[in-house]
Length: 83
Image: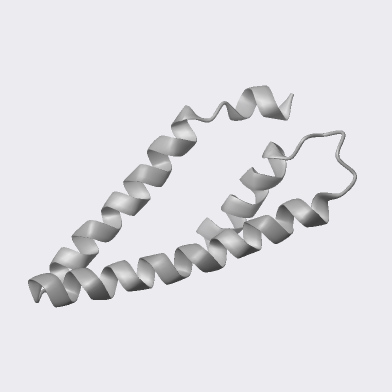
């Protein structure tokens, strides 16, 4: 998962406007949303496990998060933002 995190940070840095001098506030927001995602993911995993009684269903639900993130990145126009 370390590779995913480093790719996410570099992709996020490409989305920051080029004329911005205060990039620290953008990365502070990124760090807060990362921590929130950790809490939501852990809670969702445990909640689905308690609801269904199977960790397999929890993992299946986690793939929904990954596929959703992938689809969201496909909708983002990264090439336009990098120019």
